Image (cartoon, rainbow, N blue to C red; front, side):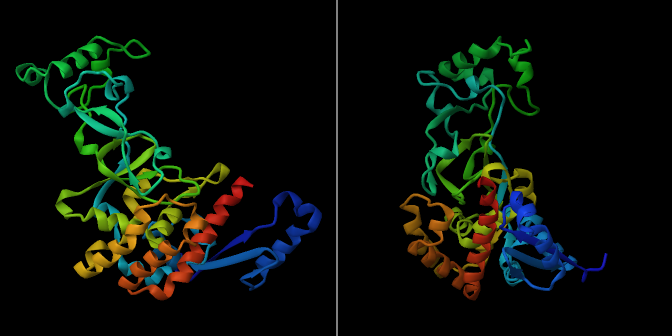
Length: 345
């Protein structure tokens, strides 16, 4: 296929059910044949096959091509794949919540209890506190017995002879290669978390301590080998570039929410490169980010109008030498968000 061949993406804000009465079908056809970029409730974006391929290489999906992305080429060299810094996956699901998420009064030794975040609705701000408890034990029955860990042993014994809904023994159902049947591995604890279906609020939350997260959330677990500065990554992921790349990699679904796929995020999600930031620049970014950490996350339109948000984005974009693109990035993000939200109305 010719890389210079163009594909046009048309958007209309006119309600489809009125098209027959208002002649919008004829207007749309005329607009598609014309060379105009916008008019009479229609917009058009054109990209060559080569441009589309370049946009896809940084995780931008076709749904985002209805917005003006002419600025994206200018930031591609500033980006890095998130999977170089974090493991990205859905939250942990071991299949038997009564075992792995014990209720109060369980009697398990504290060393086998880890925090768990069960819902994005429990996170008003950019810092998340996991209030639930999860059973996390990698020790064998023999080790627990020798160590006199009677609380963990008693808890495991409760489920040793239990069966699932089809009558299969839980030790058989929950068996996984390389781990105990009752084990939920600490390797799946999260540092950062994203909702799988964000709506008005578009952000990445940081857990105030490593925690398990529910399967309806997407976890980011830092790679120890990459020497990740989680504070800086958290800030950059919540910059306007980070928010745009989240919006652009997702897909709008019913009632206007964004559908994020953990597999696609793991393979294609990009962010501003934290390794391109000097120590002084890191301090500037984190200082500008601090006011956002002390308040609740706002709906996207209000967020992009907030003075502390604008100051933070200005600082980040200046550090990366792309401050001249700020208005374009804001406008593209607003445009994509508006397109997605029209499904609600």
